[in-house]
Image 1 (cartoon, rainbow, N blue to C red):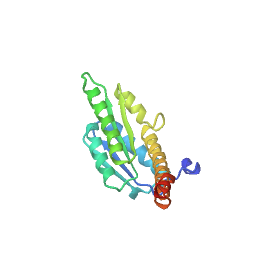
Image 2 (cartoon, helix red, strand yellow):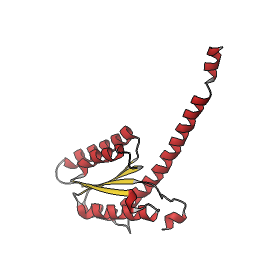
Image 3 (cartoon, rainbow, N blue to C red):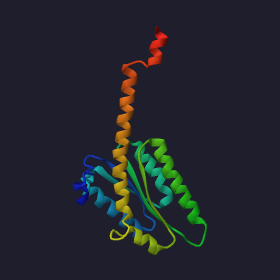
Image 4 (spheres, one colour):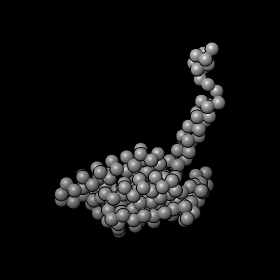
Length: 177
């Protein structure tokens, strides 16, 4: 509730949330904090859609599909990749990061990276804890901010498009004479 007082209302914004099922003791906390933060900023439950995927590796594909649907102003990606005894951690972390970033570039829809990459389960649990790091809530706040930024960018684009379609560029007038 305190965020609404700060003028950061997100009423009317629409968010897709993609969360990994793997490491569910962590991802459930991330999702709950994310949804609570969005709700606290005025987002109605019907303007949020949570999709669960098997693991972090599957997040980018579903996030991209959600963005391409046109139904969401931003997509929040939540998961936890915890280091083990094999190089699997490096491969998954790198591909998830790359995939989420590429999905944002492909769709022009903000993709929020809320995938924890930690050395231990204890670190992941701590970062998902609302009383400590609250990375799920942080991801929601980033999503709200990015929707606002992209709306500004789109207004600039529209203004630029309107200016170029209404008045010819100075060099075009010179060439016409």
